[in-house]
Amino acid sequence: MFAASGEELVRICNDNHIPIWEYAIREEVIRSEASRSDVIENMRRTLHVMMDSSTYAQDQQVRSISGLIGGDAYKIKMYADKGITLTGDFLNRAMARAMSSSEVNAAMGRIVACPTAGSCGILPAVILSAGEKLKKAKDELLNALFTAAGVGIIIAKNATLAGAEGGCQAECGSAAAMASAAVVEMMGGTPEQALNAAAIVIKNILGLVCDPVAGLVEVPCAKRNVAGTVSALTTADLVMSGVSSKIPFDEVVGAMYKVGRQMPVELRETAQGGIAITPTALKFKKEIFKD
Amino acid sequence: MRDYSVFDIVGPIMIGPSSSHTAGAARLAKVAATIADGKIIKAEFLLHGSFAETYKGHGTDKALAAGILAMEPWDERLKDSFEVAAEEGIEIIFTPTDLGEVHPNTVKFILTKDDGSVANITGSSIGGGNILIFDIDGQEVSFTGKYPTLLAQYRDLPGVISKVSSVLYEENINIANMRVYRNGKGKTATMALEADSIITETVTEKIRSIKEMNSVQSINPIVEGVF
Image 1 (cartoon, each protein chain N blue to C red):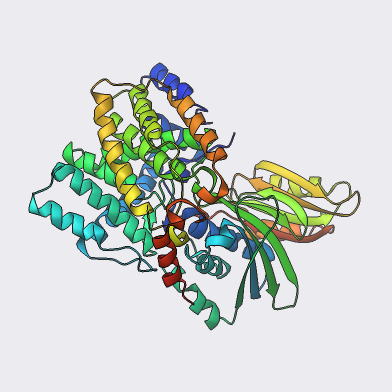
Image 2: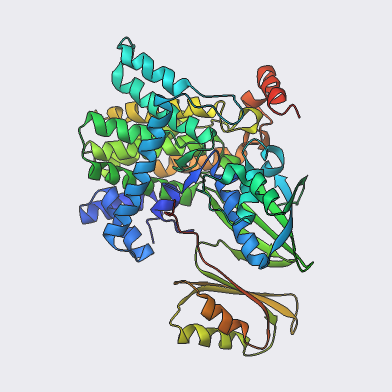
């Protein structure tokens, strides 16, 4: 069975001198009784869906079913193309990718839930952007997805990945934590450093509520995918500079779970609190469900 | 502590917008329709908690209808499921309700078949597209549909379990988990048996022929990849 905690994960990786991604692949081979190449091919299929979803809405303006969001990935791409951005080409293209998958999702298109559909923009944007910048081959992108999955398994075992149980911190927070850990390994960081990145990301998003306008996975979800992407990428740099998390990953995950349990039901995906009940949000809701 | 596949976390590949409210709902409905075992002519969905509050916006309604039509969570026809249901003459009804102290994303299926019989199945979408079925016709059960599952209702008499395990042994199927539920000694019992390999229709038929059996269904896991 997969390691029960971050501490155990790091210990196993260190004892065997392997990165998290290698451990995740080995465990998957054992649990699924599939061959290593089948497991990797399955992830390759996943990567291809991610490549499509993170590109599609940059090239054409899509609209969500409700009409509430759409066309923003296209805008960010056009802006990045002009070369006049403040934070640079890299970050802007990553934001466009995150927005694209989120818009495709809201338009009832095909995406990879990673870990959830509401947070589907973060992992593809982070992995593909970092991979492009670092000139990584496709196999290394696949490894990064295994690292992300390994970290996500530990969060799932010890907390929750569902907004209805833990708020947005459990969805976008977990996605960004998984993605940041994956980039750290991609950059040559240790398993311990990868979990440091995951811990820092979660601490920075701790307490974020799930308050979707009109109950739809659109506002503020798509932009929170953009924010999670930026956090994952900048935190990878933070950790690679030598900064570590003062609070260990496992304790941060435990804290996130407790905070989620303490959240009232209004702030857990029910659209009864937070941004969802602002006057403008309620006006949107009325317009969308006018029947 | 639950064990997870890497593809539970980075996955599933699905139609948006919500893994719990769209993909999980489609998967739940597909498993419920399999349990109901017959031609469904009317499907009523009692929606609880977050499902009751937000089902329209998340396409939960379209996903539930799609599942009844045996569509997979990554099927791009999912958003047109109401039209498909209408074409097939299946009546679809959504009723927000309160099912008590259960998971926030819970639905009770009331499925009417063409022979007039009704199946009641309750389950939850527990996150990331994963599901849990916990009630079938008033009988408490617990299974996720992630393993090949055999569901049997039978008269609670000595030796029945042994007959079932003998068939599985003959077919070289290893039992991963097995739980037996019953309302009382000698009455109807329900068995939920999870296996390590696919339970074929031949095997299901052999178990069905055991004389104490009332109903037997096999539910094999949804495998991604056929788009």
